[in-house]
Length: 79
Image 1 (cartoon, rainbow, N blue to C red):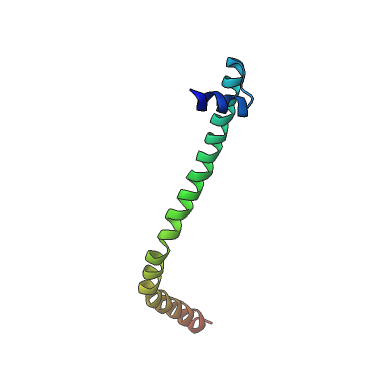
Image 2: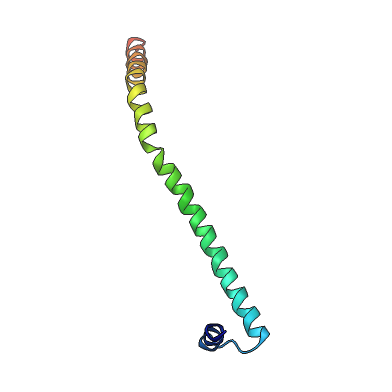
């Protein structure tokens, strides 16, 4: 009980309205932090996929290079 009283005094909460206001402020802060955390979580998931994408790129690069060479050879032979 003493800790609760000290907390209320330290945060200048003297009425129910003060308490409701404090709770509302804290809820808004938590909501903002949740949005920021969701963005960061999404970014972290994307970053974790980079090694997989690099592996795919390494596997497919010879095919793309071969297709580019064929395309380039056809373009010069028709000129």
